[in-house]
Image (spheres, rainbow, N blue to C red):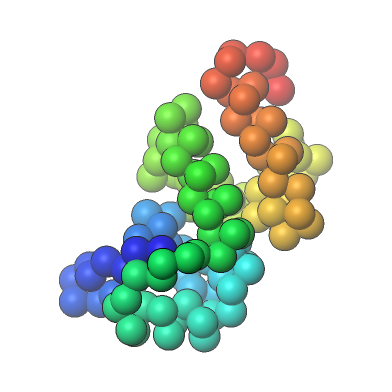
Length: 113
């Protein structure tokens, strides 16, 4: 997990990329808002990021190949018909990130949803 300095404020690079508040980002990667704040305030990179962070980062990198990267933050927090009306964030919270990988595969290969 890398920390970047944007306009004099430290943020986790992925959180900045997704333009998410700490609370929302914490839900996505299963870390408390306080833990994220401490990481950002310390300014140090984490050598061994939590598994949930790595999974979400990999998914974001992959999705960025098939959709507009700037829209990913909003996409995670919006109900999705292809996920039975759930938000992608809720799917991750349920431990079903594989459903999002399947969606990515279908988008990339051009298969119908």
